[in-house]
Structure formats: structure tokens, C-alpha cells
Image (cartoon, rainbow, N blue to C red; front, top):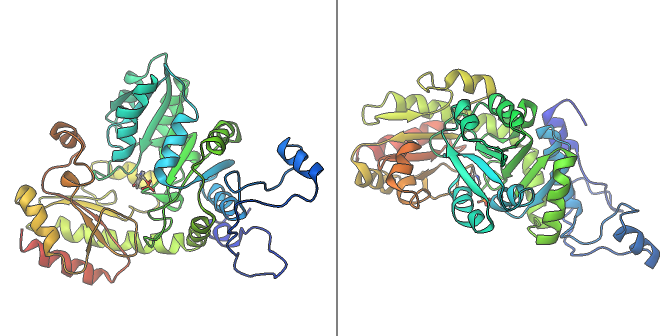
Length: 389
Ligand SMILES: *Cc1c(COP(=O)(O)O)cnc(C)c1O
């Protein structure tokens, strides 16, 4: 393992086959051969290390996890078929009936649905808090609290959670702190270095970076990952070898892509912040962001997302999206292509008006995932669409 992020991302590869491929091949196989009946017995007994079946492990998924662990500074991890499988495994693999979660109220929509609709059926309750206030986490915790769950920057309000401060509160309460690091990626911030116990990813976003495949990961100490590996092996959210291969190749270019995403996003944010038809622009590295100092301390750059408010409420937001000629209308993010989303009618439509207001989503809110196109073309398209609002 190198001290350098890019060297790990590029040079950590699984052992080569007899053909000495320079680029790692896709190991499209569901199972692996045993040399003898005795070897099979030893592998199943855990007395010998080796590959058995791709739900348990595969060279491509193993390579993806090994690279991510090096980049996130974690000991161990599991790869999952989607980001949501990672979020769910990090909770269901650790908690039992009667346990309590304290979570940010500004989490990804499906994570909130798991906590509000699925976990209560199994006797696990969640209290949602203003995640930007470490004292709120402490106030919500009690003797049954086993897990803290946060996402930073948040979607789409781009709120910053002080990972070091909330880690301290979690540990004082005896809770495991999980951070969904999807928006930042390990290039911009490494939550485990700041005290988080578990780092989760939707690799579908910036890690793939080209809008092709779904994937996820859960990373942490060997001790915490052990029960999660058991959970994943038995319940089966395994990442496919092909998707793992795509994601592993993508990690090799993560830093160069993120540098450009962030550079473009900062330029777009500055432009929108000064635009007469935009009433509010949120971006962690804008001086006007209320947690600008914390963002600068915790993150390398401001990330690839910009959230802003167009005039005219829901109708204005929809006119804006419909008037875009280049920027895509889609719900994904972290693609080479810029993507605009209208959260209040799509990704956050299941929330109540009050829940949306609490995390800063109004009918005129637009979330922009800034891509890698020439920034002048992105800005020209936004300006054109803003004329119609
Ligand atoms: C997209 C996303 C997820 C879910 O990931 P999938 O790969 O779509 O399952 C979870 N958390 C965040 C922050 C996301 O943006």
C-alpha cells in the first residue's frame, strides 16, 4: 500500500492469470474449482483462504474493495450490488429488535424510507435530527442507541456534518457512527480518518462517474465488518463481477475526474450566486455557505453538486428543467454529463412539505450535478433556461 491515493487506485490489482494481462480481466464465473475434496472441506471450514462462490467473493469484487479500503483508510469492507444494499447492510447487519438509531434528517430518500417504514416492523426506531448541530445528536441519544447515521454533504441541501465532532458524541454514547460518503468520495474526504466507524458508498455516482452501473460498498474495521460480511454472504446483495470491474477501473481516474467536477461546480456556483434570477445558491466552498469554514477544514474541494433556487415555484422549476438544451433531466448524479433534478417533485416527493422545508427544499429548488463538459457550455445552457423562469 502506498501513501499516495492515486498510486493505490491505479496499481492495486488482483493477481494476474497465465496470460499476464496488463488490464485485469473480468472473472465472469459463479463458482470456483476445488483441487480436491479435502481442499473443499478446508475452504468451507475456513482453514484455508480461497475463492468458493461469487456470492462470497470474486477477484473483481475483492479488488474493488481492497482499493476502496486503501483510499478510505479502512481495514476491511464488502461490496454490494447497489448503494442501498450497502446502506441497508450497514444497519441490518449490526442492529437487533429494540435498538435505536439517531440519524440526520437530511439523508438520501430511500435511507429515510428504510428507517421510517421497514426497520420499525422489526422493532428498530429512528430519531431524526438537525445533523449540523452535534448537541442535537447527543440530545437524541439514549441507552438503546446503537447507531448514528449521517451523510455529508447532504442531498440536496449540501449541509455539512462535522464528522469529528459527531464521532466524539457517538463514541461517548457507545454508538457506531456510519457516514454515507457518496457525495464527497474518498478523494474529497475520508470519514474514517475523522473518527467515523463505518463508511458507506453508492458507487453508482462519482465512483463509476459515467452513469453506467450500480454498485455500493460498506467499509470499516475488521471487527465491525465481520458481522456485515456474514449478513451479506447469507442474504446475497453481492456486487456482480462485471460491475466490480467497471468500478475498479473507474477508481483509477477518480481524482482527476473529481478535480474537474469540483472546478466546474465552483465556477457554476459563483456564476449562479451572482445571477439576478437565482435567489439562493448552495455550494460548500462558496464564502456565503453557512458552514464554509467547516467544509474547507473537512473537504479537499467543494464537490460536484450545486443546489439553487429559481423563481416561480414549482412551475418555474419545471419551466427551467424543460428549457435546458444540453444539461440532462435525470435523477442520477456524479456523471460526466451535467444533470438537473427537481427534488420536490421527484427524489424528495415522498416527504411532507414540512420535512422538505426542514432540509431546505422549496418548490423552486433545483439540484445540479455538474459534469465534465466545458464549463462555459454548462453556464450558457443554465443562463438560457433561467430566462424562461
Ligand atoms: C444514490 C444514493 C444512494 C443510493 O445508491 P444506489 O446505488 O442508487 O442504490 C445512497 N446515498 C446517496 C447519498 C446517494 O446519492
